Length: 439
Image (cartoon, rainbow, N blue to C red; front, side, top):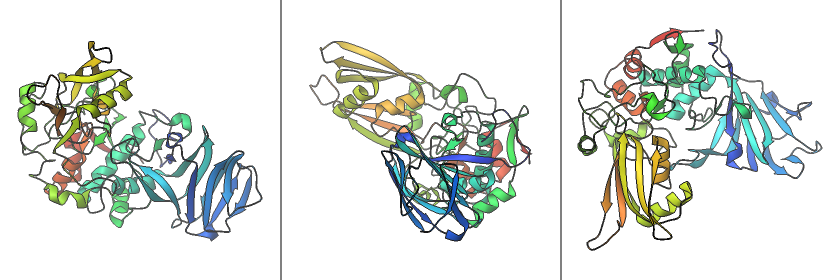
């Protein structure tokens, strides 16, 4: 595992959580590509060869059950070792988009070492592999294999930098560095591995972005919507000089999206930014996106919710007893237009008027829609029939997908498609940083 606050001088091994306790998964199927180069370590003590290329694994009352491998009971842990650079184990089902509106189950081909154990009564699967092999897979798991070389290299550099900055450590208590999904970085094994993504890792090997002698915490999102967000608006109140409110554009755009009227004009327009249809038409976008992404509008979009759907969602998420919602009132916005404070005025089950204030981008997105709102950079319109005291529903008109800080993937794609080089892309999104080869 990675060591916090240590810049490595050689390529480290990485542990990636593929199936997590929160998935509450009790069975999975493994298909082994190369029997002769694969062995299993059972209960950290007994090594056996693999006799069948398909293994069904499930949880029973004594631990882990292996259908097709008899005679070793009870099983508490498994390690699959692949002694071939070309070998892999196909694992299914694996969730992609965990906790988000695009969640689906996929199959993943995982190289190197797999560890399986039980945590809180459910299966946990960890893939251990060299960092550069992981990065070659991340580039084309995050976005599609059709992306141009300059983008692939930029994505690889920032994925490496974020990983080695090792700031969040969300899953360290479970014994791995990162998970496989949008919570950390997308990693779908070698499913989408291409010669281009391999070259992206090879040609940038060991390169990271540095600021003040530290590796940059290079977080990124799908689309900023036209203006990048500050770090401190989204996470802890610790400004990062290389992550600021900067227009995602060639020319400077003067706009104050903290003001409601300016935000309304912004969302109802299509400014000439790198992530806009001016640089990458939305009808061409699908071929560049990752396999789990939905086809749709990422720069500007509209979502509607009924009053009843919203009431059910806020009662569930906030543990309220609302009977109806009276209004949704933006109180404070960040520089990209993303909401920092939202007031929800409602009537409770005892017919008393009440209000609650929701803070931060992530929480507002979680509360406003049952499938997690694409972005909090939204303007809100009420659907209110004549002679009605309450809104019938709400229309959310939004800008961008995700938190909007750091590299905007669709913006970086727009830059690459229009001739910008890798260093120009990363320096645009992380101004003041410098590229450095650390191993």
